[in-house]
Length: 141
Image 1 (cartoon, helix red, strand yellow):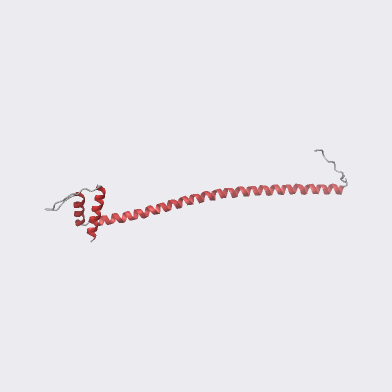
Image 2 (image 1 turned 120 degrees about the horizontal axis):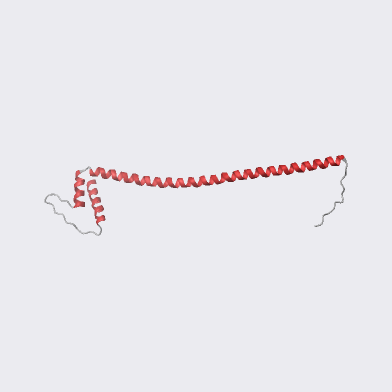
C-alpha cells in the first residue's frame, strides 16, 4: 500500500510541541502499564497452574491412600475374625474330650474295644472339615 500523506500539518509552536511530548509520554506510560499488567497476569496464571497441578496430584494421592485404607480395614476385619476363630480352636483344644474326639475322627484312633469303619468319601479334605465340624458341634452341646 502506498503511504497516505496527512493533509493536516502540525504546528511548530512550543505549546503544540509540549502537548505532543505529553501525549507521547502518556502513550509510553499506557504501554508500560499494559506490559506490567500482562506480566503480572502471566505470573499469576503460572502460579495458579502450578498450584492446580499440585492440588490435583495431592487429590490423586489422597484417593490412593483411601483405597489402601479400605483394603487394610477389610484385611484387618478378616484377620480379627481369623484370630477369634483360632482362639476358639485353642480353647477347644484345651478340652481333653474334644481332642480325643478329634483324634478319633481325623486319625481313626479308637477306644479300647471300639471298632472303626472307614467309609470312602469323594474328597478327603471335605471329610476332615466335616469331621471337625461334627466334633465341634458335639462338644458345643
